[in-house]
Picture (cartoon, rainbow, N blue to C red):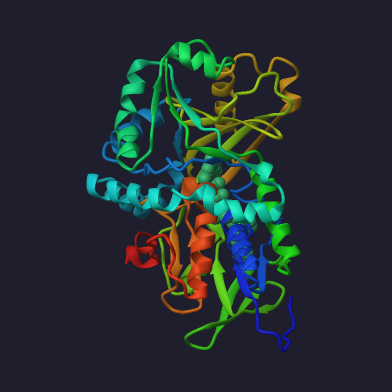
Length: 423
Ligand SMILES: Cc1cc2nc3c(=O)[nH]c(=O)nc-3n(C[C@H](O)[C@H](O)[C@H](O)COP(=O)(O)OP(=O)(O)OC[C@H]3O[C@@H](n4cnc5c(N)ncnc54)[C@H](O)[C@@H]3O)c2cc1C
């Protein structure tokens, strides 16, 4: 807890995931007094175990024309990428209704355009704050592959690839021989691939958040391990952030609490339909084989990626609450599919080297985050709901929020991300 003093109160960023850490990093490098508050260690939310992908091409919203037709197929496949906890359906129904309405041609095209604008400069926006961490090795840019076991699934992905291309993503098609040359460890049954050279990744998503947080502290920012429960205000401005342990006077507030942002956003005047798309990973330490590039399975919709800490298979969408118990079978599915993709892996003492993880994507039904000023208080800003692309969009979101707070016009048009779009 902070006691009041004559110094101007800091900008308080709520949530030390990748979005909060990037926002705090942008604020700190401008010399703004910055406080980052999280009940846990920085980076231990969704930002801990994600697929580590920094893909500017991750612009295809989850709800697309035809998505509804794929759902039964995914649900019936015991190794499919989607699961829904039926007990949760009644609570989920309003979100699913909005989700299905977001899947028209017009809306999904608009969402893709908005996401492309948000993700286009991800690397340029990470560059200065990562340079401040002095750990530039954390972010790399070497491209990524999408690989297919059949011509049919290669063709089935055509529409989403065309949407990317319409938004300026360059995609190269590879046959089996070229694919083998690029990824020699891949199972021989992959017949086609797409290569997107502009893509990047981080070698360790957790260390990236930790490094950004440490950089904020080096620049004078402060980090508190407390849970934010509410706000104090004077009618038009938030004056302090209330935590379970006390209060933090604030000049401005940024809400970046990922999947846990809903209640706090409502207190700031904006009710948004935030749900969680839960996801899993399975990781093998000291792998015998390593993919050279991040490899996305066209069929299984998961990513296989080599990190500092091992090889990670990440993916799955499980619609259930924040509280429901993990279904570790979802992580086992990823492991099985990953071992099929890279058959040379996991031969030696697999269980001892295996770790699994469940994380909570913060998701709005239109696959767009909420970035912008709160409806009630002119010094409070939202920065949450990044769904499948929070790592890709973290730096650009942080930069845009720092611009808003400083009174500058952000480079990105934030209109598609306004919190009031669901009213
Ligand atoms: C399996 C999986 C794979 C993924 N792969 C990718 C990928 O490859 N690329 C990509 O871009 N994205 C990916 N994502 C999505 C990405 O991980 C998220 O979009 C991103 O991590 C969200 O970041 P965040 O900072 O908003 O939330 P989080 O990282 O969840 O951070 C929110 C923080 O807020 C804190 N908090 C909660 N309540 C409070 C409170 N009351 N007071 C203060 N703090 C609070 C939490 O403790 C947490 O630390 C993936 C997600 C999953 C699950």
